[in-house]
Length: 232
Image (cartoon, rainbow, N blue to C red):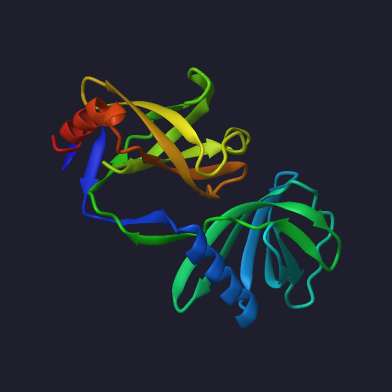
């Protein structure tokens, strides 16, 4: 059904964060099994991608080598990276950034948590393009971080598209305030949550972020409002 700018449909997949121990074991398997990763990034307005292998790893750094005779050329330090790989038919991904790079080797920050996909517990609602998400710093008296375009929302959280400059201001697992309006009367919904994923946004200089709403008492009123609006 469609109501108040919300198109409701059945359960879809959602990105979830794996615990640190599981993430570490998976990265060790990637290295031992010589599994290739796809590394994507944007530089000077150009979208680029490499197939890479994990040459070595420690607790802080993954050292990568290019696959198939490619070379790492002109990749700047602190470049934001989206990395994906598959094991046993399951897709995994994480965000990182370059530490150092030459033609044959690249060092990137080792992620603490990997992400993968699973079925969503709740219905997901697709939102009208005009729906804006306002992000604030939960630990700095609501200091504004920026705004994004909402893509979907459920009782668990939401996804929105941000410009890269805004996405770069927020780290994975950082606490943030989230505000948006829904329904025919454009009711305000305000949550406190955590950033759980960053993926390429499908266009130059955009990032899709996944935000998980906190399940604590502070979000109880917002959760009741959202549940009501999603069930209209």
